[in-house]
Image 1 (cartoon, helix red, strand yellow):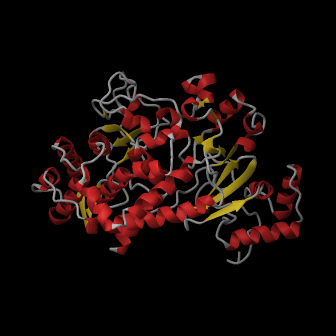
Image 2 (image 1 turned 180 degrees about the vertical axis):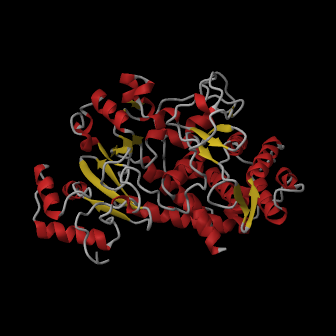
Length: 491
C-alpha cells in the first residue's frame, strides 16, 4: 500500500482516543492524538461515520453502516473525510493494532508515562505492605468523578451500568450511546463512559449532593473496578507489593491525621494471591535512573526510599526535595544525601523558575484548547485555568521569593504527600529520580498559591479545599505532567 493511499478498510489508530462529551445539550466527540498532543473536535454525525470504521469495512460499507444509524453520507464525501484523518496521522494501517492485536492495542510511548513494568508474573506469595497509619474518609462528593479525562469500564461493568441506569444517555440497549472504545474504533477490552459537563455520566447531583448513581442503586460492587480501588496504588518492588494512595483526591488529604476511616484494602488480605486478579500491580524495573546518565539497582532504590521515609521532614518539604535532588546528582544514593533533605538550603526562586515557566506553558496551552470545547462548569477546565494563573503569578520574582520565605499553609499535607509517594514508589518513573524530586517540589509550590487564585476567581468548588490533590489530579489526568520532560530536554 502506498504511504499516501487511504487504507482499504480504515479505522482510527491505536494512539488516538475518542471521547464523547455533552456540553449542555450539545454532543461533541474529541479525538486526542497521544503522539502529537493535538485535539480534533467532531460532531455526532461525523463520529457515527468514524465509529463505523472499525477496520472490517471499506468506505462504501462504512457509509451503509452509518446510514443505518441515521447519519447518511455520500461515498465521495466520506472518502474525503477519511483522507483528511489519514493525512493527519489519525488512521491506522489496514492490519489490526499497528503490530498488535486489536483486542490489546499497543500503548504508545509518552514522556509522561510511568517507567514501571507491567505487573504480570508478580510472585503470588509476595507479601502486601500497606501504607501505615492511614485510613480513608470518603466524602462521596464525587470530585474524582469530575476531574479525569477517562473513566474505564470492562464489558461486564458497562453492561451492568447500562442495566442499572438504562436511561442514562439512552444506553440501556445501545452500548455505543453511553461508551466509546478505550482506543481507536475497534472493539476493545475496555470502554470509556461519556462525560456530561466534564462529569461521569453516572454521577448525579451537584456540589455536596453529588453521588455515584451506580453505587446508590447497586452498591459499591456496581462501580467499575478502577473506581472501587481508587485512590489505592499497587507496586511490586521485589520485596513486597507496596499499597499506597495517589494524593489526587481531596478525600485522601482530608483524611490525614484522622482515624476510623476505611482501610485501603481488606485487612485479611496478606499476599499478592489474595488480590483481585484484575488489579494492576506495577513492577519496579531491575534498574532505574537516579540522575541523568546514572542508574541504581532496584534493591538500592527500595532501601534508599525506606531511609528517606524514616527521615525527619524539614520545615519546608519543597526546599528539602530540591536540596536532595542536588545531592543525588552529586553523590548518588550513597553517603549522607538524606541529611540534605533534613537540613536543606533555602529554595531559590531562580532555581524554581524554569519549572514554573514550563508548567505555565503547558497549562496555558491546555486552557486555550479547553475553552474551545469544554463546558464552563467542567472542573478539569477550571483546574487547568487555575494552574495557568498560579504559575503566571509565580513568574513575578518578588511574589515567588515572598512565598518561599513564608511557612507552608498545610505542612501536614505536604509531609503526607511525600510519605505516600515514597511508600508507593511514585517518585520512580519516566524521569530520573533527581528531576522527579524537583518536579514534586514545583508542584507543592504551585499548590501553595492555588488557594489565592481560587479565592480571586470566586471558586467554591469542594475540590479547592485540597490544592495539592487538585494539582496532582490535573497534572496526571490531563498530561500537564509532561512539563517536567520539557524542562529536562531544555536543560
